[in-house]
Image (tube, rainbow, N blue to C red; front, side):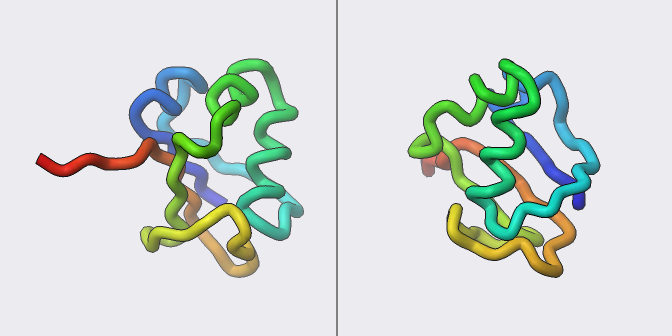
Length: 81
């Protein structure tokens, strides 16, 4: 699946997007898998209260299943103005 990183997540990881082969069942499982890759991922996902997720461009949550999902996007909360 395609995984997208925005704002400071992209800066910490050093990538804007990547293809990820995973057996993760939920977003939370995927986050744990990514955290275990290397320190830059662990740093990016150290505070999940500061991270939002979208599955196939629809806002979701960490408990959401990944079955059939083609794109996962991680980004900081948005503010209006």
